[in-house]
Image (cartoon, rainbow, N blue to C red; front, side, top):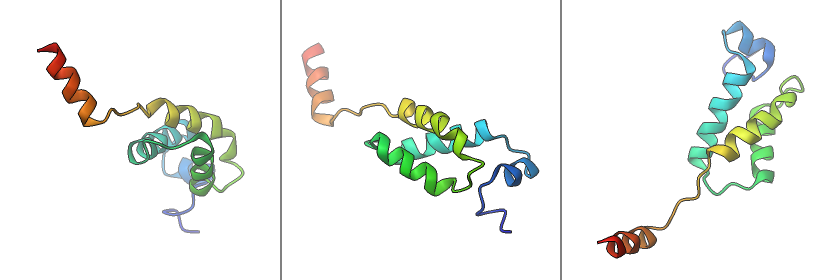
Length: 87
């Protein structure tokens, strides 16, 4: 068993990690890297990161954390116009 690549509740527990913290931190990282990710993409990434059936109950936590962390980013042109209008 490769504890560095195998995401399973038992493996994580042996390393002192709990599912909620692990999933929320992973979701925040995914959201940071993939800002325009659709919900179906979030689910696909979850199942790639956590293939163990023991992790699957955490899907909703991952989805909510990931989608909640994604904030729509504004193109720079809009930010510049807003700054000019305020001046």
